[in-house]
Image 1 (cartoon, rainbow, N blue to C red):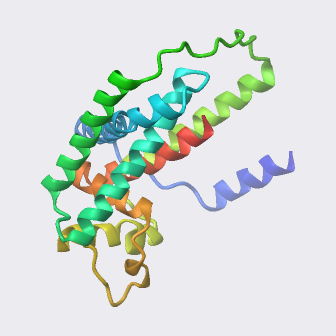
Image 2: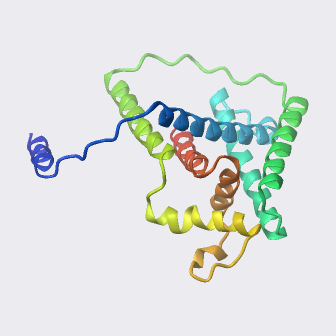
Image 3: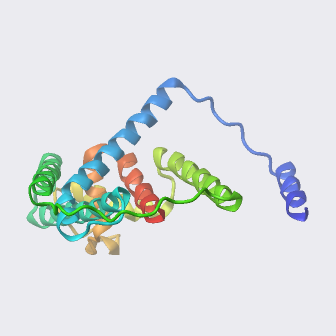
Length: 219
């Protein structure tokens, strides 16, 4: 009771600002950004198909997809790192590497995947009320995070490091030293993934990738 009373008092003291009207154009733009991010994630899943078919069967298709997607993202990151050190970090070489890795993963997965059937799990029972409430809570949190992923970036750390450094790499055509940013000398795996995502679908694609990683981790 005290929590709700204090929350109501804060809302009276600091009212929420008026929200701008949502236009059809903005909705379509957000849908396009989500499509670019989902397509990039799907290509990563295809690229990791070889690893998923050879090394990890999993108990469900979801587990196999998550493992393959993680392996594909690792391959994308390594490819971007090689392009960056080679001075060939441009849009079309990056997209070509992603396409080649996705095609190769799909081919090898279809040709060399293990043929033994996946283990059969007993059917899950119905969810009780606390479980349903938890699922609804997680879905609400995921929806709020998805809205943030599809909007413009405003967080300081992302603007000066997580997205700014990969964007500087892309503009320079390779990994370089930025005098005012210590972290430019540390081309981390997620930063090189953002480099590929920036080429693929812009800032929102990189943010959607980050959102998807959190979602797949929860699943």
